[in-house]
Structure formats: structure tokens, C-alpha cells
Length: 65
Image 1 (cartoon, rainbow, N blue to C red):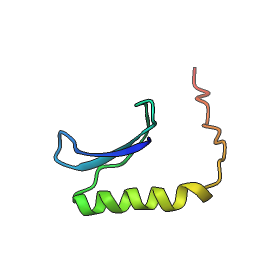
Image 2 (image 1 turned 90 degrees about the vertical axis):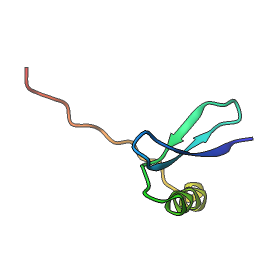
Image 3 (image 1 turned 180 degrees about the vertical axis):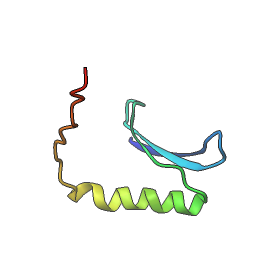
Image 4 (image 1 turned 90 degrees about the horizontal axis):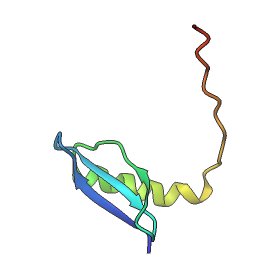
């Protein structure tokens, strides 16, 4: 079963990571100042991911040699 793991990072901020059923980390969050904010972030991913578009972004290449 996929799962969200909530943890506190070295700077004391709350973060979550989404793990696939094989245990591989497939997404990580920003740092949140509160656990409640982190939980809202999880809720947002759950709500928005099924309808999110997938787009390819081309990064600007460094032309300086």
C-alpha cells in the first residue's frame, strides 16, 4: 500500500514523503512550520494529484563556455 510518512527534519520543520508500495520514495514535500500545515499539504496532494496535468518543462541550457 502506498503511504505518506510525516517526519521532522533537522531544522525542526515538518515534512512528508510519499512512498510507493515497494518502499521507494516518489514525492517529498517542502518544510512546514506546523504539523497541521503538513497534514494540509498531504490533503492537497490527495485532492489535486488525480486531476493534475503532466507537462514537460525544458530548462534553459547554459550557453556560457
